[in-house]
Image (cartoon, rainbow, N blue to C red; front, side, top):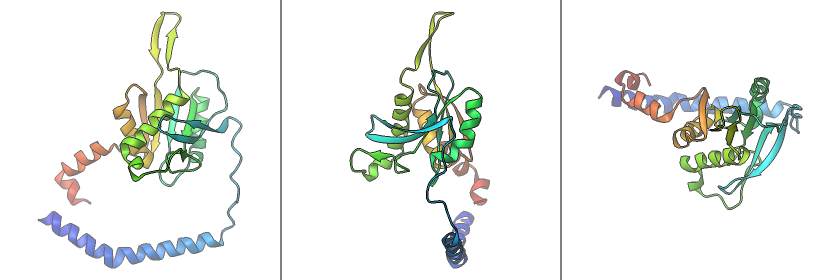
Length: 212
């Protein structure tokens, strides 16, 4: 009962005070942006990063940033941006990972940047399973030969990727890691949470419910 009363009060107070404050803040932000002299063209990319496109099995022509160096590497990092970000937001981290020997890839997810669908997008194409399939198909395309042979021990091993995820990219990234463990070795989350764990913690913890 207390929980229901609390949320009713939140809705009432949010409508009376939160909405006007939000609209006022949005007006201020729009006014500020209108006065700024933003650059009309993007900054040039660092020499070790290039912009490319790839056709995926899910019907996308995906724009992505990647390491300019095309030599083989066992260490591969895939960066998934949040909303409303772009792959360029990952450039500082991509450069750091490259110094540690990683090949880096940062795609524009479906609906972002210059990534385009080869057919008319449907609402269903933005369901989590479909977005996860996009990322899995991207990984399979940019890392096509993942089976390698250790010539010392003469054993085969599979190259898996490190997913670096943020914000909405975290929702998609964790989903990919759960569904395709054959592709993902580890996940590095920045300002992120696995949604099943989130709901299990929040809905299963009375104190958490009262704190929101």
